[in-house]
Image (cartoon, rainbow, N blue to C red; front, side, top):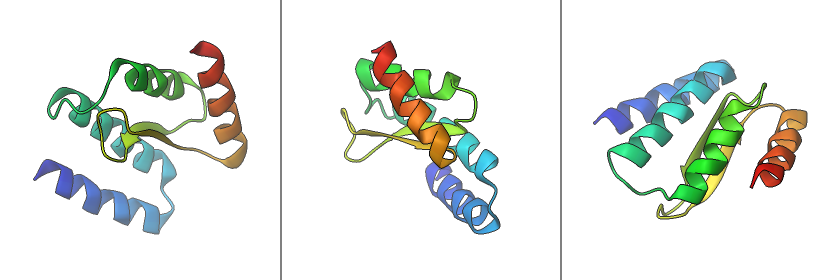
Length: 91
């Protein structure tokens, strides 16, 4: 139920253009998927941690089928390029 409510909140935040709080929900969702559902992996967690530590990246989480999945992040176009570059360098 928590994830359904988080999805509803995320939709409302996107409709309102509130990317910072949307990013916060992305971070909370990743923690839930990692800790409660255990559908992440060490490599993806490392990428999410790196992305979340970069100024201007409002949120990052796994997406897709889990057990590896894909990293999704929120931020402006320039910030996305920086997140991708820095995530690649750190790994």
